[in-house]
Every structure is written in C-alpha cells, then in structure tokens.
Image 1: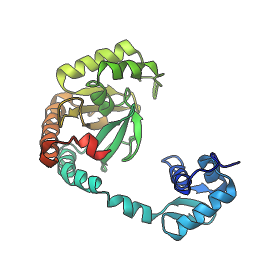
Image 2 (image 1 turned 45 degrees about the vertical axis):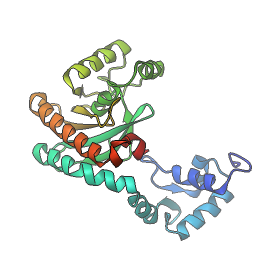
Image 3 (image 1 turned 120 degrees about the vertical axis):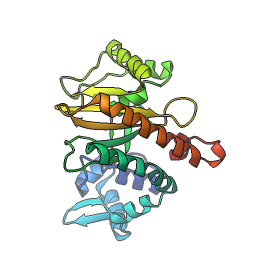
Length: 262
C-alpha cells in the first residue's frame, strides 16, 4: 500500500484516517485503518500514534477507535448546540406522546442525513442512527425531503440506480413520483417495510424559508401499530413548531438554517 497522493498535506491524511471509521467500522487494526485510508502502514502508524496521544483516537490492544477527545470537540460546535437546543423539546414531546422512534433528517447530497434520533424501550429496532445516512427513496423522512426538490434535482436523482433495501422497496421512478405527488398534496410521506421489514414510517417536511424543506421529522413504528390518521396531524403540528422556532433563531431572518448547518 502506498500513500494515495504524493505531497498531500498532513491535515488531509489525518482527515482520511478519521474518516476511515464509520458505523460499520468503528474499531480498526492499524492494517485495516491504513487500507481504508489508502495510506502506507508506516504513515498510518505515525498519524495514529499522534492522534492517540492527543485523545482523538483510543487504542485498545491492537485496535483503534474514535476517541472521547474528538467527541468532546464535536459537541462544542456552535451550530450543533444551537440546533439541538431548538429542536430537542419538540422531539421529546413527540416521543413522549407516541413512544415510537423519532427521527430528524436533512438532505445531504442524495441521501437523508439523520441529525437527531430518539428511541426507547417500546420503539421498534431500526437501522437509522444519529449521524448516519439512509436512502431518500426508502425512508419516510427521505421521501418528505425528496418530494419538494426541484425537477432538475429529481431528474438527476432518478438517473442513479435505486437499490432495494427490502422486497417492499419502491424503485420505479413512475411509482416514486406518484408517491411524491401525494406527499405534496397531503403534506406527509409514508413507507411500509421499505427500509426494515415489519416497520412503517411517517414523516413531514419542515420549511424554514422559501424553497425546499430544511429538514423532515418522522416516526418509525411497527407496521401493526402505525396510525397515520392519528399521527399525521401531530407530526404536522411539531413540524410547524420547529419551523417557527428555527426561523426565529436566524440572525435577522436573513440566513437559512441549511446554510448555517453546513
């Protein structure tokens, strides 16, 4: 293995080392880390040794993982703090009323990026996690975000292959477009066993300013417990409250939260 780019800055190499970790690779040996970062093993060893000494990586035996020092720094991000202070009361209320998985996601590229998630003992297992990404076409929050994008965005989106997460995943452009049209009409999106067998989701877009939604808030419940008639009005009320709170927090109302968050 050789370094990916000769003359690459040390910061860029450090970033590749840190990004080698993800939800499926939260613990790596030095050899695995070097391979995923596309670095020579000696280079990876020098970088990891420094990161461990600074508390940005942890080492247990022969395996490395993200360190608590990096987590602490991330928690200080100004936008992260502001954002959570605003949305958390709404998410808690939604969870207390329903007892189901509560998700908040934003559009990032062509995926739904989950920026907050609440769950509890009654909630069904899901594959989502805070900081994780899932497809737009198989998730409730994803479809709520997708429904209000421009036609140019949709054309580009449907040019890529759409994977099936389950046998129930809808991957036909015509069928998805019909669902998106219904979401625009009703104000909410739904899925049934498209991401996880046995689960259903319901989501509502959150509009903070003109244009596409900033985020989407959703519930995931067992298919047998899903109650759209009861939950949709509640989700719309929560989404409206979040939109008002987020909009009021902008500096003079001149910036979009999409810009602030990114």
